[in-house]
Picture (cartoon, rainbow, N blue to C red):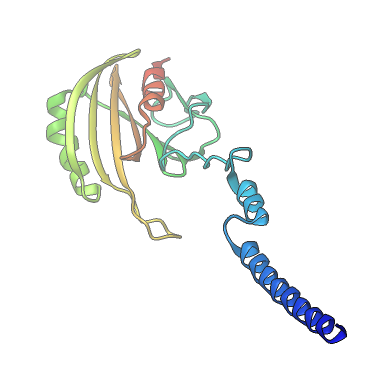
Length: 217
């Protein structure tokens, strides 16, 4: 009887060892599988139903002027002619050279040129004189279109076209720009307001605000 009891005990210990090893292997596999509690918690933390992933940051196309952009009146202090005012985006950098004033910010530009003129510009004069000049001055000048439009200052001549910007001195990149050139005239004086920015930018409203704000003084 003693021998039989010892044999039974040995067999029992062997079975216990086998079961322990099997449980140990099963536990290791579950911990590394996709259904383990730790894995599930990590998934929830990264963006589960109760913890949604953050929405991507929205960004406007390059050159888009913000909707909340403020505008301030610009009145030239000197030059050939100072009898006008026009609103320009607040905070933009300004450079002045005789009768040319330029406001710039990133990829957008407002260029204001005042000059004496013997006659008011027309669709024909802009087509026959201004377009050839720009064709020789603007890199890859294209798609010129001349028309008459109404603004608060009256009926004026609008020239739209496209061209390449100057090469960025830092990045070396060249941007394809769209241009709107408004020619205002009164009593022997012409003021041209040229607005430009990347062709894919949606600046219809800002350009309308600026061109509509022009007024003679």
